[in-house]
Image 1 (cartoon, rainbow, N blue to C red):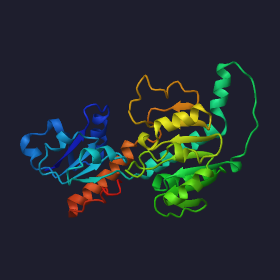
Image 2 (cartoon, rainbow, N blue to C red):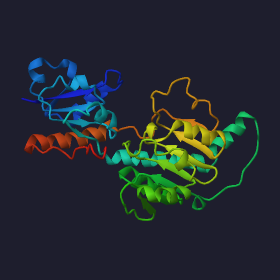
Image 3 (tube, helix red, strand yellow):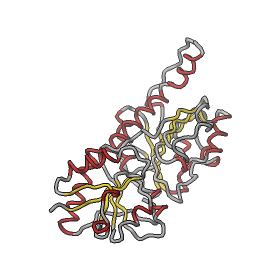
Image 4 (tube, helix red, strand yellow):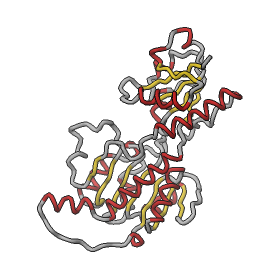
Length: 314
């Protein structure tokens, strides 16, 4: 008889059915069932569930629940919602996600490096004007965050010929790049970053990290790419830097409120490119295979994968 494995997503999530299908294909020995389809008896016995930003009240429908496996890498919302719970949370760690993010970092770095916003503005004015070409070797890309995503992005950028430096909270070593660590070394790293790419997790330490003080360390006309979380950037400080052209351009894929409200200043700002949180979508096929392996080991020997450290925030 197959084990019943609940899948719990926020009711607003559009792809729950697709996840159930992908997970079921990856785990033929399990029966993947949306929470709403479980009877009370089954709910009372489930010790593990697969989740996509679930509502806390839905998790409370499973009184025996010991741990959940997220199908996303970002779990800060769930940690906030479950702050008063000792439920173990396993986040998705998928090499494909890192590769997809690295592709996005390179693509939008090239977008800025080759002056795409400038030429788009000229097109709108019907203005024909060429600008000097600058080789990638003349530009330094600074990476905020040197975890799996940051390392993958660093390698892509190095292959494209860019200079690369990076910063993390604790000391890291990545071949080919200058690594900085801790609050004391952040200003030095920022001063080198012609294009700054944010890939940090959202934690109490990183919330508001990019503010008036830290943005002021960037070189004149530097650009920002935020593929992390909106709350890492202080909105008012970013707007002020863009308004006075201290910052050349910002490519933003994440925001404090998503979807981005229609009346947000970001939409119409000439120095902002808005993306709808698409830099590194989770690949359902590869993610489902990883979740399946973790669930299989748990069924075999009771081993729960490495869980989120709530103190660190990731």
